[in-house]
Image 1 (tube, helix red, strand yellow):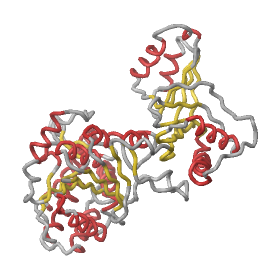
Image 2 (cartoon, helix red, strand yellow; image 1 turned 120 degrees about the vertical axis):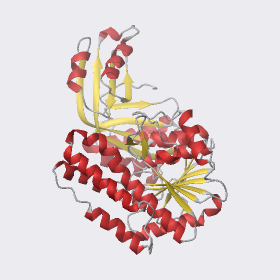
Image 3 (tube, helix red, strand yellow; image 1 turned 90 degrees about the vertical axis):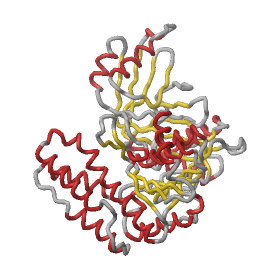
Image 4 (cartoon, one colour; image 1 turned 180 degrees about the vertical axis):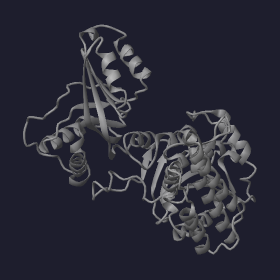
Length: 463
């Protein structure tokens, strides 16, 4: 059994949707469970309708015409069951928003859910027309209920609910289930969404609950690349990567996957494949539990932009315990999450992805330390099995020195799956291009133009 998730970029028009149906048909012997996103662009259209409703003039004609036209182009004569009911529900939600603006945010989950629910009905109808018996399900009908505001991924009750709902409908002779990704019901019954890459998370949780053989994410890319191809023309395809490497890559800037969508599969040792809907015969990227020891090296270079750096200096750190606990208590109170940390005897530097509450942070830290906050920074991360850290760092620093790029801070974990450093945000593209050229394209030592390698921060920590 496999889980096949198709994102909005794979569902932009009738031709794409036919292609998706063909991919599912080719995998019918593997007993697929299909997870579907809204048609490409629909979520943005629904959010725009919300704004129109707040202004008092929402009109669903354009979004309905698009979906009805795709039904016609696919040759689906009979409307899917409940099709008109969803359009009535959309009108009702928009009317409630326009009359009660204070409840607009509370109704947003229900509003956005209609995109996935329409897509699931549409694809199931197409599969039935092609002779593949299929049934569409809303996520809450297959166990995605009682979801708290912060979804706990290792929640056994959630996985048990999903299993109990799905194990009968995934039997060998059962129709193919087409399930809405991204959406769920909260404990109070209200519809909510699972956030960015929420459909990937839906697929991963279903795969974990059913203990499937493989989870497939079908997207508009061939898989993971050694760098963002929009920044590096010579970016190469990465055929195989470990869960730890993929998680680090997702956390530090890659938009192909979200870290939370990886965890359920990782916990259960289920391989994830990332494949291209437009080129299904290509290998894509496979994420596995462990890689052979003979596969070291940097797998990919990624970046996280608009980072804020907080530098804290205090003589109270010398020989004292509890200083960092005091610092992190403040970060906890202000709900600020730290990405990287570097420390010495008298200072600690931290990078923040979220830049809110900075005045309060500075005010509280300055009660016992000197604080310098630097905005406009970026994290560059080298992801892979870094078995030769010294050699790699030598190439990195020589390359950046030759490009006159300063490294402000550096951090490497004991897992050796990630070397990260902070640079000025304006240098991100140049930095990635030069490092990719050095680590992948030249395949030879880099000569240093000057022995004066610029670094502002002296400190490194194994974090």
